[in-house]
Image (cartoon, rainbow, N blue to C red; front, side, top):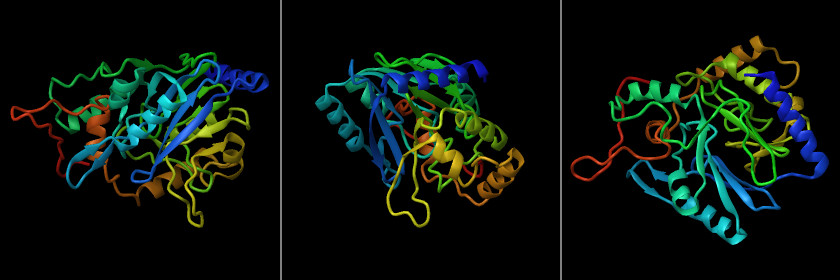
Length: 307
């Protein structure tokens, strides 16, 4: 990670706020997976990006549907938006991506962090995916590196590598808004877990503190919300200032060692996500399912006694 990239992100946000060059954001919340999909667009050119889409999936029957994705498609068409990016902040372990469906209907380049290759290597072995499964990120159109430009119409954008939850996590700053995936949750809920293969609590702390160096007014759009105790509504938007002041895991003053001890202890109490097995197999392929077998049916694997 480079300080130069962070400095450019800070300058971008300050300039965007001064000029009023801010994206319009519409969010869609999938309560079944507690996932927020964000559609951001430039109000001048109407160019838009979709962050972290969700494919409906019933694990009991193995059936998929596109109800949630089709709701997003309807919104984009009604608003007259032009999709230029389909972005995954990381390879999710709690929901299946709808990016192929959305790309087919709306276009846009599918992008993810370049470290997806590490994830593909690790989980390619876990799922015994075989030599036909490429581990080079070729399932995606763009592999983002730290500091890469991610323009959206007339709005400037920059990608920041923020590993820790997984090796491939990225945050995307568009104008004055940051789409940060599974690094932070709302201040009353804390931070993402760091115990998946390739996760690292120390790395997560450093990534979070990097994000919290952004200007306090920066809008943060989160990938998930689980309703903290005592809160009745789902919420997925906050600010850097609110996180620094009140995040129960990483507010200002919490040391790295304190965070690592807290995060490690909490992770030890968590079970695996309900959709981890199907999600990672699909998402490491860019949201696509494995190829059909000789009977024309696609199958997902469940490795026994492995994770």
